[in-house]
Length: 488
Image 1: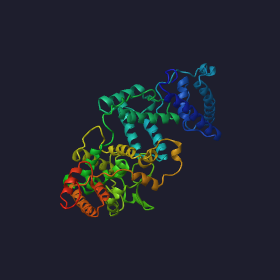
Image 2 (image 1 turned 90 degrees about the vertical axis):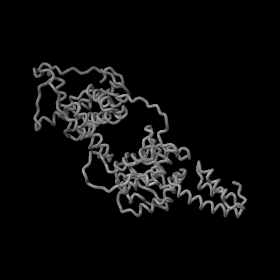
Image 3 (image 1 turned 135 degrees about the horizontal axis):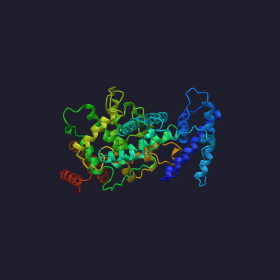
Image 4 (image 1 turned 120 degrees about the horizontal axis):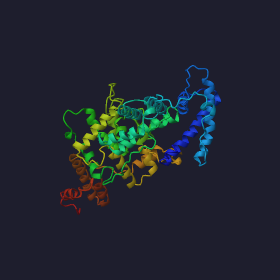
């Protein structure tokens, strides 16, 4: 690597990390007198480097002694490598003269030992699952690894090259039409992660991803990432109009269209997280009603649960009563055991239904905003407008600011509910609902006028007023009893 030159600090830091990791593992096995699994692969690699024609059977009694010698040399070499990393001039040791003159050398062994890329993936998968991380990531990673294997035409990780990896990225971009960001953060990142883990575990000597980058041009933003107020209110208004939905739509899909966008609007949660909610995820504590977003219900990106209080507007619309009337289990789909494409979840179907609803029925068609994720960005924007603290935003949305202070203390339901209630209400009633509210308000206005309580009049009108309604309210007021002293 040093002859080629490290391309950036990350590669140099990774190399330094590998030195430390190798020494730590070697010390643990050396102290316990055990033979690590990577010794056989390292032995084959060393034999190939020096050109020695050595063979050892799997049951050879020489393995314990050889393993101990190799571990000891790895420990000694770690300190020398650190000195070289700090800039000291360290000469590469020559091949021992006894070996060079023994007549056992025959030049480099043609070809390389077989190390399956699928095997490296399984090592990565084992660690990923042990850390209780997302199973969806496992499915996505495996799909990327299988695709690369199919492209290069073999599964030998030792023979895969950086040139092949670069060509693969070019194919993804120019033949399959994938975006540079998808290539870099999904496909290339998956291959790099698996090879790097294989190197750290001494399961493979080759890493074709070293030095390979796929440039992601910075996109020029020409609009907000989240929904605008008009887009948000349009979507929410359409959820209240079932007559807009196509005939024959499943009742559970109608139910999802009615409630999922509203919950996303007031929680900033991912659509998939809301689509997989169960009745038992709606909870109450100290008089505060909230939802639990948990991996027990399905995929959660962070792999961690969180509680999010329900905004009073959701409760007033009857969400709680509607949910409590549903049978136990998932609210927006009926779980089944049908075999699906790897990584696919039933909550994905709900998300797709909502995406189509936004584009085709609510007619929010601007491709620069994501039809589902737009709620998540909008939540952040609105939260900043009403001075919700960043740390509360992060807790509510399941983000992390990476600071150590974030791990101290708990965010109580009282505090989270207080912050959620800062969010302004979405006033998007249907015409009939608004008419009823207006007439009720006008009746209260009339009574307040009789009592000469004009301050109360303002409060009442504020409850039903929104941009574009002022003229209608004034016209309605003019139709009140002509003898009243109200000045429209």
